[in-house]
Length: 457
Image 1 (tube, one colour):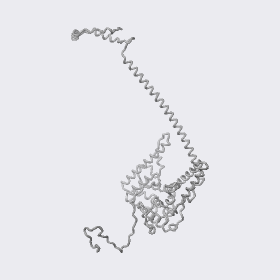
Image 2 (tube, rainbow, N blue to C red; image 1 turned 90 degrees about the vertical axis):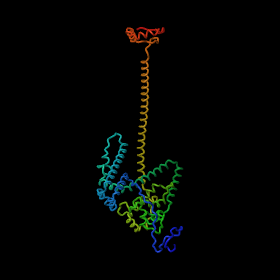
Image 3 (spheres, rainbow, N blue to C red; image 1 turned 60 degrees about the vertical axis):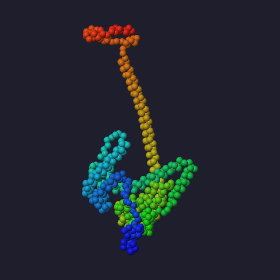
Image 4 (tube, rainbow, N blue to C red; image 1 turned 30 degrees about the horizontal axis):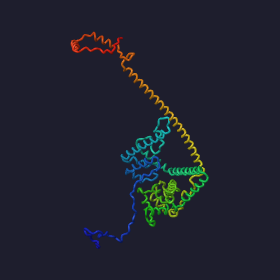
């Protein structure tokens, strides 16, 4: 009803209205958030799965989870946090023991596979000694997960992650040198006319790649507002750093990790790189993403824990670089990541490896020929043995047939043994019973066959 007192028990559609308080202050409308899902992002460490599973198990213990959330970087690095392991529940310790035994088993399999490929003398393998080369666990105790294991795991992961970016840069440098080496080798394989056309085509692709929109400096207000508008679908005039932080903290742990930061650069990278274009290299795009993340970490990550807290993020928005940053230089704007001397050294190493591989291939070819010859010799021996077995079997059959044939005379007539005559003589001398005599009288006399000749010996 218009007076707002009541509505009919069965009102027609649309007759009731929600009361509106026109004097109420407008509420802040936040954009719809997608359901948060934990992503299993690889750290690049060879023990990444073991590290993540240990952390997940420890976080199931309320006491340890609380200590982990309140611990600072120094507590984690110096091992003080590992002492809290003695206070976790029994089921947590049991699961950690199981994870360690699985990791030990995995490392043993890796060692065996590696040594089997190089150990041609079938030497005995001392797994206990070989496990000492792995620093992320205690090899002396292979059955239970102790505080020392947690301390070693944290220390090793911290050290390895600090060197991870450096290794990625070195890997990218090798990639770029190999690409340039292959480009030069391809040009050398062409005649002069085709080489000139190919060089012109490659130069056109480079120029096309450089023609892109301006790339905003990572972490600047322009870059973040662009994400706010194009990715989050919000009004750039209403940009709020705190809301932005909450929106992009995808796992809700109140920090932005390296993967969450790198996800913010996708829009900027799409200005320069398109996987559908021949001139755009996606490996270079990932190197560009790494450089952008390092830039933000250098300016924002105050305590160098490789995480950006809300406080650190808000402090960075107060700096002059946030609103007036220097222009961002892409990889195309910078000098090559390698020098000509480094490229020549790289090519010399490639040449050595090619010679080594050629020698190895020749050795394998000779071994293959030797195996083929041995196979042929073995096949010939097998056939020879098979023929000998057949001949022996035939001789045995012939011998058996000869032994089973009745004796005969020189003209083919049957030949009797002397024992037969003796039996006949003994039968003649033996007394005849009355029954047998009577039977003989009742039966007619059987004449011997005239053609059968009896021979006496």
